[in-house]
Length: 511
Image (cartoon, rainbow, N blue to C red; front, side, top):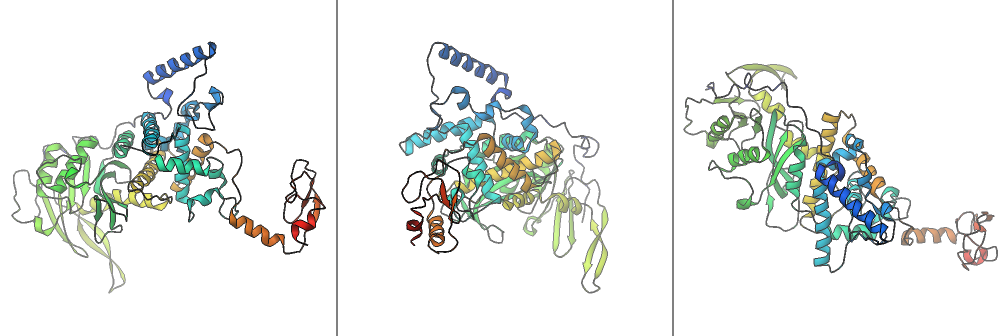
C-alpha cells in the first residue's frame, strides 16, 4: 500500500539544509539608518531649516500637536530620530522592525491625519512619537487589563496606571483611536516579516481572528476553538514564526488560481508570494492535501506532507513520479501522503495501554513522526497571540484585525529576539519591556492631571465626616490653598491629606 517516490531533486544531498543562509541584518526603524537616500533627504531638510533660522523665519510642522507647537525645533524633533543603532538589539527595536518599517509608519501618520480631516472635519496633527506611544498603550493593555480603558487614566489607587497616564492624555488617546488609519496592514506585515530567514520546516493552516459583529467576510467554522471571526491563510515555521498571511475574502482572495482546487491554490500561492526558497518542506492538514498538489510541489522543488481525506483517495494513479501513501491506525485511521521519503520505513513509538495501565511500544510509519512534530506552527503562533492579546476594544469592524496584527508582530519580534539576537526572556517580559520602552521614549508627560473621579470624591467624603482621628498638622508648605476658603495655608488635616486653615478645620469636617 506504500510506494517510494523519486523526484527531480534529491532532498538530502541536493540542498544544504544543515547550513541555512546567514540571517539578514534587520532594517533600522530610524530614518537616518534606513537608506542612503533618506539620510541625504534629512540632511537637506536640516540645511533648509538652518537657513530659515538664519534668515529669522520660523518653520512650523503641520503634524505637530497642540502641546508641541511653539516649542523649540530641537525639543519638538521626533525622539525616534535621535535613537541609536544599538536599539535594534533591544526588544523594542525587534518589535518596531517587525510591525512595520519607518516609511510605512510615516504613511500611517499621514493617512490618519487625512482621514480625520476628511471624515471628522478637524485636524488630528498626529506625530510619529504619538503613534508609537499609542502602540505602547495597546500592548500594555494586553498584560494589564481593566474593565474600561478610561480607568487607566483614573487617579484612583486601585486602577491607576502611572506609565500610561504619564505618557499620553486620555482625550488625546481617544482622538487617535477614532482616527488611526492603517492600510494595507497585511502587506506591511508580510513585508516586514521577511527579516527572518526561512526555516526548513514550514506549516500551512488557517488562523481565526475573533469577531462577533456583522461583516461580509466573517466566517463561521464549527468545531474550531474560535468559531466566529475573520479567516486568514497563514504560513509559519514549526517554531511559530509567521512568514506570510493572506485574509480569506472568498473569490476576492489575493492568491493566484492554479486550477487544482482551493487547498493546493492556497499552499502554492503562499509559497509564491512569500518567495519560499526551493528545498523547504511544507506540512498541511487534510483541507489542503491532494495528489495533484504533491505533483505540483515536486515540480517546484518543495517537500510536501499532509493528511488526506477519504473522499480524495478514489482512483489513485501510480505514475513514474510515485508518491508515498501510508494508512495507519492510531486512535483513528489516518492517511498521509508525502513526497519527502525515499522508502517506506517504520519507527517505534510509545502508546498508553489503558487495560494494562502501562506504555506499549508500537510500530509507526516514519513519515508520520515529522508531520506530528512540525505541523503545529500556525497553531503555536495563534496560541502566543492569544496569551496577552490587546484588551482595548472598539466597535469598528477592522479593529480586531488591527489589534491581532500588533499582537502577531509582537510574537514575531519575540521569536526574532530569541533566535537571532540570542535573548532568553519570555513573551510576557518581552511585551512589558517593549511597552514601557515605547511609553518612556516617545511619550509626553501631561502638565497636570484631570479632575477627580466620582469614586475618589465619594471615598474622601466618607472619611471626611466620620469625626475620628482628624488632627491639624503644619506641613511647612507655603504654596497650598485651603480646601474650604481657597486661601494659602501651611496647615492640613493629617487624615484627609487636604490643606485647611485652623479656622476652617471644623467647618470643613462638619463639626
